[in-house]
Length: 148
Image 1: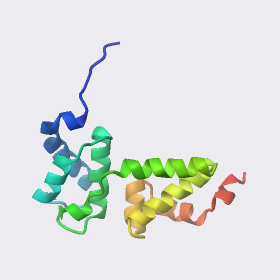
Image 2: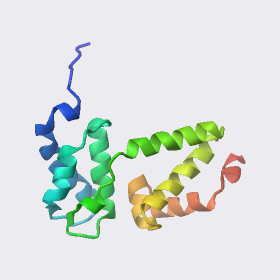
Image 3: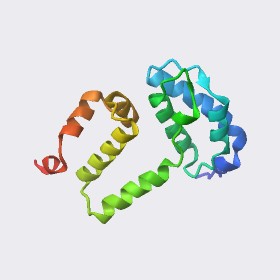
């Protein structure tokens, strides 16, 4: 096995611009949204962020922004940086309460619904599931999910 050491994204700032553009194109196409680009202020925010989650975090931030924007371009208000802390908090909350997998899924779906401002279409896009699946998950309670 050959190991290739790739420095973290925060050490490869010159790659961020190209990655932003690639992810914008990818998620605009996937989500069927005609985006023109990204504002210079939003791009600056992305370039100055430390990216503890590396490229995967950048992809997730861009995907959320594309799904949630109401503009022709991503603006700073569309960016939610530092979501990994929120995910860690969700995991810690679930573990502290001895949540089942079904309960944890329910917590996550509800958090995404909050993030999407209650918009089920956007939440389904963020979760990468069909809207009907989202409706079903919102109707199910963790107790119902445990039943055979």
